[in-house]
Image: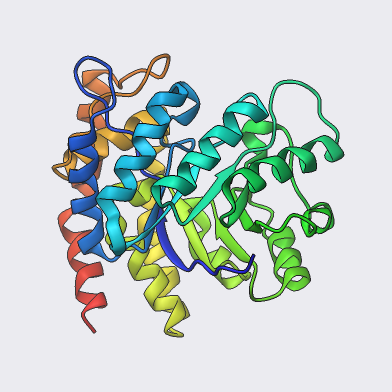
Length: 307
């Protein structure tokens, strides 16, 4: 099912209100913050979106709200991975029903599964949705990686359209590009190597820190696709200084803190993920100001995109 996705896709946080419930109004505000910055869509209820900490009803509400919030101004990809095929297929069908452009899923977790089991899981999920489906590979959290040879067995699934490749093994990313050709979408997953992933054949990026510095990632993408590779890597090096600060603690929790620094309040993390302590927040804010973030960083990226 060829359906090409290109560009910058923030893995958006799930806004939570003071009662610990999904906050749809804040999701709309987050979309209003991101869209003018030039992003090409978003990825919801993934790792950054704390999807596995939400129940099925909540996840459906997030997906529906995200599609409404982005409208025709960006493609919404819904992560629908869950413990069992039944819930995953239910979420997949719902994502298609509300107008998502694509779905994505981690492979089955916790119990041991053969590659044959995994393929049947994705076959059922893809059939339930009938829209482009992207395998989500994140070995650091799943203790399972996918090679180009593994993915060759997925060709028989009509909805299989690409992969979210959250892995530093860019050699394998290139193998996937070589084996699957230009119609296959590869999303680079680690923010720290977005420019590197593009250089090795990725079409797009999905990432956590895109939430609070979308301008920088859009600038990386524009520079690279315009042939200005040196500038793309210059932006990458600069944003990595910010990422280094952001990932000192729990990166998911810090992402919501960083969004507050940009004027977008998406609440606190979902337990058991904890909110950073006040002294941790103060230290982070101080270190960011020393680097001139966000003002100087944003200004440079915005000026570049005007060229």
